[in-house]
Length: 400
Image (cartoon, rainbow, N blue to C red; front, side, top):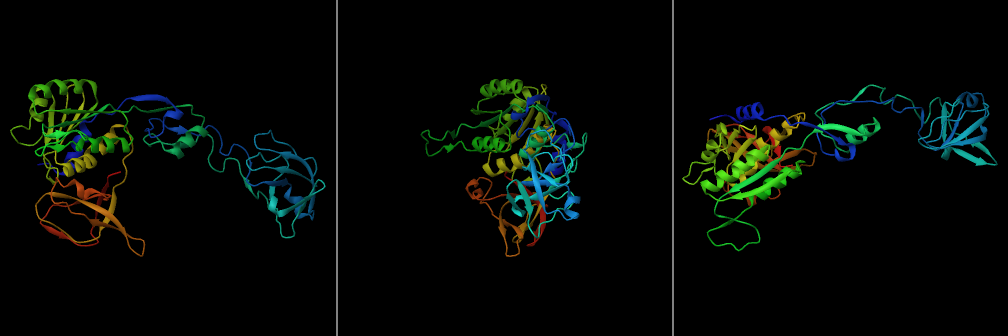
């Protein structure tokens, strides 16, 4: 069987990079940037006033002048004024252009204003470039502001707007479909018999995809019937970029998914990974280029495989730069018996020194999804047999 790292590598080799589209800036929140963004001009584009007060010539203060005639008012957004005489000052507002002939701003709280004069308080200073945000001190025209591959959050959207980008080239959202299989699955709200179970995996998968910024997500439920599976899977393979199936990929008599996919020309890249939970994970590629993830149907396995493999692969297909691995220390010893990579749900606890510990939260088995409530994610532990002590540092995967 493959190791998790080998499965990662194979998925990355076969998942297609999504096309680029140009969108209005207001529609780009959460999208992945597919072009570099450069500074349109110096930032700030002028010497900018950083405090309400008066702008003046600092040399006049150094020469002993403490009271200045208020010549005019410079508001933000107005063209720059010019100082007429060294013993004058110009009232300025935060964000305004620094008037020509001025090189210092004295804050309003350090002034006494009366009869058109602004007198400096006894301890007030007027150092050169005081309370002035100098032109180009943040960045220079033409400088690289955001590199391709970055997910556009509020800060990046603001930066793009400042660079004059009315439209941005970003990765197209993939067309995803989540498919659950099984005759025993009953929708929430519908009457359920003692031998049936609620359809919960699909809701968890769709929720996780949307929490990670994927919005074009369809949902379908198929019975364990070869004809229905063949018809619906053929349709989804031609209309979606990625299929995420929950269930039907194990070895049972009614586990029909992998067989039907093979009949439809989907090439199996791998089946089974040396891990627990989630050993029956299946991955393949259709002639259309659509990627197919067959997740084990037991709920803990489903969520672990989705988080460990599917979500990182989807972010990679967007052209998003990979996040550095997040590591955390175990909050209690853990014994791993089988010679399989072990995924263990954890919740975060913080001690009196501010350290974060991953407290193990064991499940009864891979069907015990109720134990995941309140957990933050899971850690990846090396194959056993071994006991990993409290403080053992390993990789963390967050649910979100």
